[in-house]
Image (cartoon, rainbow, N blue to C red; front, top):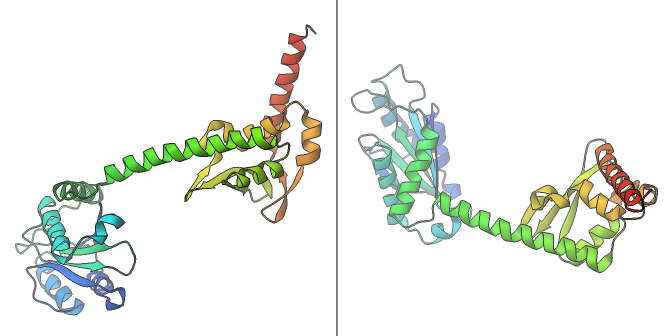
Length: 287
């Protein structure tokens, strides 16, 4: 579950958004208010806020978002409990507050509005409110046995490791199966093996590298493995054929429905590698 928070000044406009029936909004929590629409509630907030005229951003706006899977099983009473527990964690129990749940997207989320000014005219300290909101949401999620951000991050990272490994495996398989010598051949081979290769083309219409799309993930080549940067793929394509042979077939490429050239950086990387190989080969032969 994710928690976000900030202090705002446009109370009525924000509440009107939260209460918008077109978004299938439903009030799930309220405290110390009697109003039945945005105008009435914001008026109640304003009457209290007049006790502290120095506080300009006098309303606290929070968005609390359970994961999609958790959200499917949360009823109104559960959402109300989330708000109640969140208010406790943030030490906001003595203030006016109202919360709505939005279901217009598949990701169910709560908009919670709290009067920053209490009935004694004291303004709530909003220092690091974003970070504190997330920490409060984490504690509430743990208490209610909901998925925390840390769990999501852990699962995502472990899934990502598996995705990287699988893309790299198919990359190696493509070279073994098809022995490509051009970027076009490589892209075709990878797509045969179920990985979509997306060229990264700069404003000068030059190829800089590639992104790899697999199982809903879209990763930069170097983020999959360092051997999968554009330059390193180029080195491998060049192989033993030499720079002139490589450039003859790869100087101008038709990729993403446009003709592009290799970037200067990529050409230098590939050329440097071929020179190293040539020198090494000469040394091995005793030249």
